[in-house]
Length: 236
Image (cartoon, rainbow, N blue to C red; front, side, top):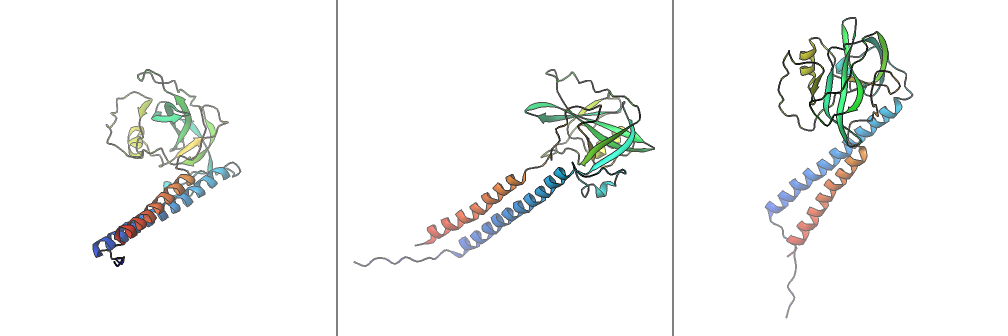
């Protein structure tokens, strides 16, 4: 009795599918590695902010990414009548708000994030966030405004809504429309030592480089696993 010979003869459509799938998995893996490298640079810039001297003049929003997590020092007075409570902000597992207050000076304005404070169990009760409108000099790290993973359509606030206004991830266009004057598309994270703030445990609001690395390993593993399955199935 003769033993049947085994041969590797996958159909053309299966080979094409394997090539396309593996190319997609490998591409996703390298994309995650690149994102991880970008996040490492952001974390390094954040760590270096402790030793970098503050910049005295604000930058255009087109240059905001280049100056991300750099300290800036600005002088002005808070617009105490128009403040935002950024909703759905968590700190140590607790829900709360971040307080966003415009700082005005000679016709210019910039958004100052004065920190986090907890939300009341009764959602209709807003926290007290009053602050003096006296002229002051503040220092803060330049950072993008908080963004959701998926932005849903939200109701446009009306002009007669009371201040402060509780909002969840407002766009810069919505903020400008409510304030009635222009502000750049970024915020300054108020330094922890400054008066007039709340909890300021600032850290990069991005996925860690290690997380991107783990995702990259998963994508590469998918490609390897698919190749192994392909060989086993088609070895006849």
